[in-house]
Amino acid sequence: MEITLIAEFDTRRAAELAVEHVVQECGVPRSDVFVQPTGSDNTAGKRVDGADAKSSPEPDEGGKFEGTIEVSVDFHGGDTKQVTEALKSAGAKTVRTK
Image 1 (cartoon, rainbow, N blue to C red):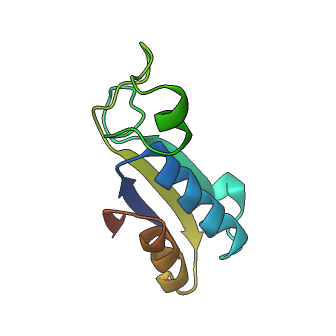
Image 2: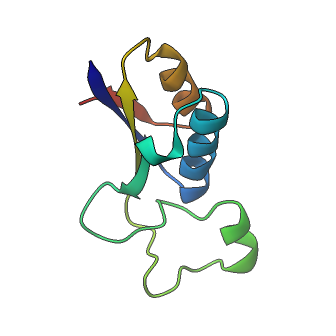
């Protein structure tokens, strides 16, 4: 049975870290992991973090800090616990299934 796990992150850095954990530690194919803003607006997360803080304290025109970043993982059977824990350990605010 296929389900989708959806996690929300405050920063783009945390979302990208979650992708790496899910792919490298959980063995999920990268083609089954998606990153996008949670709303219709383009966003780089809710706050500056990581490399953004050092190189660009204010977002560029297209990268506003207005919303959260969503990481969705298409999961093709088995136990979702390891993937859920990887998302949470990377800083997911919430993890839900669809």
